[in-house]
Amino acid sequence: MSSGSEAVSWFATQAVCSPARPGEGNPLEWPPVTPSDLRALVPDLGSTIYLNTAAMAAGCAPVRAAYTQALERWAAGRFDWSQAERAGEAARAGFARLIGARASEIAIVPSVSAAAGLVAMSLAPPKPGENILVGAGEFSSNYFPWRVLEARGYDVRAVPFDEHGPSEERFASGMSGRIAEMLDKVIGYFSEEGAFQIAEVYGARGDADAAFAWLERAFEQHDPGLSVLMTAEFLGSLHGDPRWNPFLEKMGFRK
Image 1 (cartoon, rainbow, N blue to C red):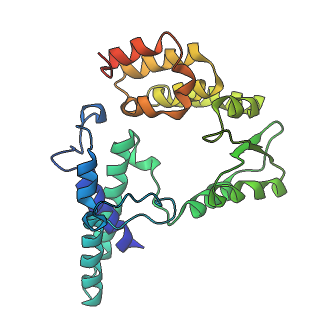
Image 2 (image 1 turned 30 degrees about the vertical axis):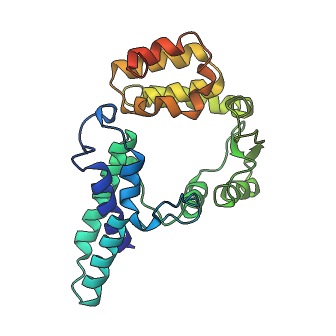
């Protein structure tokens, strides 16, 4: 719904574009968000720790205010659809800045299952050697849309979960030669804009040399993806490498 887009935009504007967290510039230069900042957005929770965001997020104050305003305009017959669409575009742009992407790469969808189903059903018929990897313990909303592709001829492989989910090694072992070929094409297309993401792919495949080479390239390009370097799951295989701590020091994460 467009009113939902307006509400999301209100929140994105407050969380991403406020004076405390500038909406422009390199995310690496943004000040960190503190627990107090987050609690201020959901004052009704008090001291409660809310962990059920996978099913239903707690209603934060900016979103509630935006919904209330949208409902009042709707009830009075003054709802402006063009303004709501502009709010949706502002939300896309704000989220894109937050994760270091382009607004054109962000889609506003009603749910994970709707997004996964849309992407899955848009895939062309499989070519020999192509496969799809999905975590065996994934939420059903991001599991069954891919499994149904088996009926269309895809080789859908469920990657077993370890303690915290599928490991990088398990994903890497499930990759086919066709996927490796596609990776080469992705590198050719995104080498100037997605160096950090390419480093993540190589990290997931266990190729430390290539991963560090692309991290260095990301550093030279001021890639905003480096803002999540410390928590990037697919780079976990690099943490024990002797090059990891020196790179963190160069980034300013450790002194």
